[in-house]
Image (cartoon, rainbow, N blue to C red; front, side, top):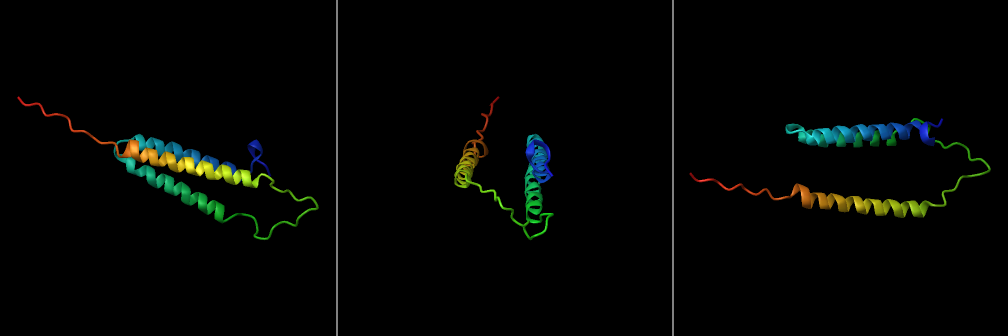
Length: 113
């Protein structure tokens, strides 16, 4: 049962979940006092994603293999791409920490009258 764009309904549900979490997290991060509430939104989306991935709807026994098995011949390339993307993501988080979160706040000079 294929959904839109040739992917199944589970992938679409995860895409919708993370899109909503991203939008809500960005909206909460822009808010003044509710900035702290953005972290539980992301953690909740991660927990729900883990629950959806760890408890599949299908049975545990795989379907019987047919005469033609599909082989992923680009597995190594995908793994290398995932590793590079993970390193870039961690580098971006590090740069965010340095340049945004740890930016010094300078005191404004006092005016003496």
